[in-house]
Length: 318
Image (cartoon, rainbow, N blue to C red; front, side):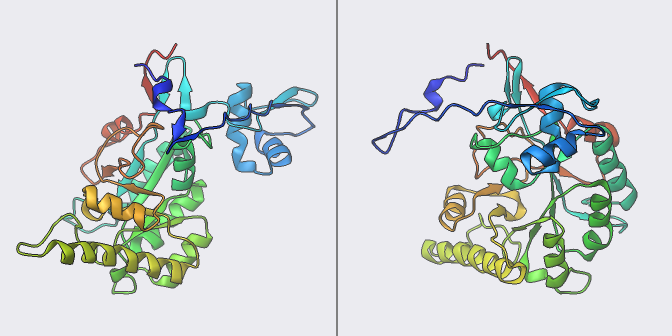
């Protein structure tokens, strides 16, 4: 596979693009007694969660006092490109967590816990949609083993079961809401949703009613259909931003479906990215309004789960 300069045109809308400034060189520092990748990242990058950058750049995770350490202050693997291939980010889509019999889309507490512990053991780092879109825009870098965990639910069981498991493991996740269901029986309240946001979870939109936006009712005028799609998304986004007191920048298409109109409407309304519900790879050149999410339900066994965690696509990029 060849990724050439043709992907990056020299002009946009007739304006000549200025070349990017050269990347800042890494810092050469000396490890102190008791230093870890996290403490070094906190001291020099002001963010202990970037410990993975120290580990990956130096090829080691433990240091002794006096060791020379390189601290990258800029992305050193833009787009996840390597001589052997390019990075892809698995995005997992859960519908709900619980123990209801006969609901195949639901994942039990024990299975979900096992899956999350497997991610932790295998060295995966849970990321946010913002980190993913920064990576796609070449303005940020991701850990080699990144995963985006998402939920399409307002169920109270996510708050009671799923979120505590994630917090225990130091994972974050994204919750896509159909706002019309918030506060109903067995559903989360807005206070619980806001608390989850304050705990580091991203709150995204899945419309107001959760109905598919690609289905135009038989006999429905196009203008009426157009207005209904806009209203469904605009009102849901407004509700989330009002109750959570934070911008809502990410959309999961209801039922995982989209078309040109719905995707264009998502962009017009200011969503930074949108997700379909279909297995697939997510390299840096993925369409931001068609990011793949792999459904995970009760029919997925441990071997199948592992196969859905691809993070590198082999390609000769020399």
